[in-house]
Image 1: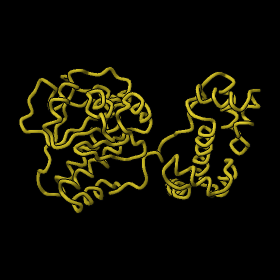
Image 2 (image 1 turned 120 degrees about the horizontal axis):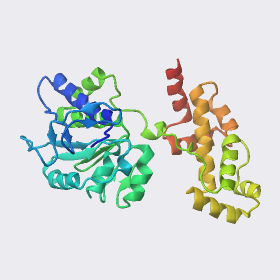
Image 3 (image 1 turned 180 degrees about the vertical axis):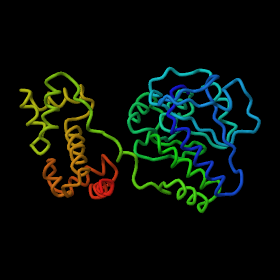
Image 4 (image 1 turned 180 degrees about the horizontal axis):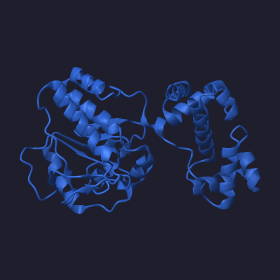
Length: 314
């Protein structure tokens, strides 16, 4: 589609091309299919020349695997009815189909995800679940398999998905050789939520509520019980909790936890403090409470998170 994320296309292509090299045979014939004629300008400005165009050029061989690449604006792009018609006609004939990143929105708009379990980029996972209630969205998964359907999380997760398809087709040994050659994890540790910036969104709601949110973010170690926060606005606990949930979209307790975890992540990324100190500085009762909250929000432990960023800093 116009504005496609280049890595959503080039990443999987390189995995399949390398599989041909490692298998010493042409296991895959690769095609880039565009939604309209001419060069496709990607989100980075680079242009792709497609091998075929939807509805205008016949593909000589039957398609074995069909993947829809995403774009930074896919979640809010007007649906292309011609693409939807083409997908609905083609997907019953392919062995497997799916999407990379926000390409899941194109499949959903075409009516191909109803009742299915999928993943997409963490930043738009909630929107996909909201816009298409019949779809079960796993916001943390790197890639998801549901029958013939395969979906990948954000951007580079397309490489992980493609590697898993190579393993399906050509076996574990070839897939491991591809991963080694491309210097990527054979099985990436953890889910995609470790890369999210959940909890760092700008304050929302009326100005008084935004002030409360800024206070929490600036003072994560303080007592942020509903009673204490309500008193800052001069409201009863019940009225404050109802107002906060209505205008912010989550309960005060959830917002406080997400914000504390976001602050904890920044401290761990700096590499200067250990989880026990982080727990104290971020308002968690103890390191176990921090660990449980961190795993809920990020998908891995604080110690694992710190270790990864410490290595990156070194």
